[in-house]
Image 1 (cartoon, one colour):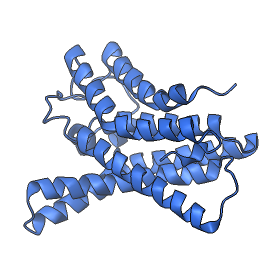
Image 2 (image 1 turned 180 degrees about the vertical axis):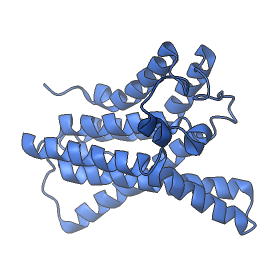
Image 3 (image 1 turned 90 degrees about the horizontal axis):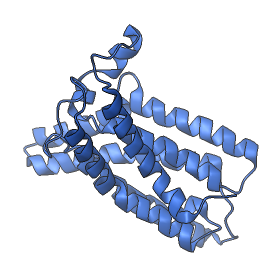
Length: 234
């Protein structure tokens, strides 16, 4: 039995919040023992500067799994789609080290914008847009790989739906990355250099909820009013 539209849309956000709670409860930090190879790839500049991206990855991975649960294609295709899509997202987000191409694209784009004497706000906006584009591309490819049952449509309708998905999804993720990128400005502490406090966990959950709420609403609306078009979601 498929989960309801509301539960499906909220599941990735709840998973990200639970991941934050688990990190705060267990006291996981840079002091926690990790294999040297993993620690060298995980800890570093991008995790220090953009710590909430770790939970954005959780959101994306659960979003891909949710889409497979809602999909109307064969089980084999959905399983393969999840595996390839999750691998793509993790590769773009963690290779060669934490942040991957997602955060590096944003950092490079924002940095170049600032170096052309644009205001910091414009540099931050373009950087968030670049990161959102790469992150959203991984979700879009996952959606295509998993597939979904959609009613027959003309090529014009398909183009219109594709433009809608890309446009609204990109804008929602742009907002999300702008929010989570401002974690330190919002008072989030120095995790992972030390354990995450309860108040910092609350701030992290608030930023994740506020940032990804527009994307969640797009998914909910798509599942609520287009029940045969699970892949219509951003």
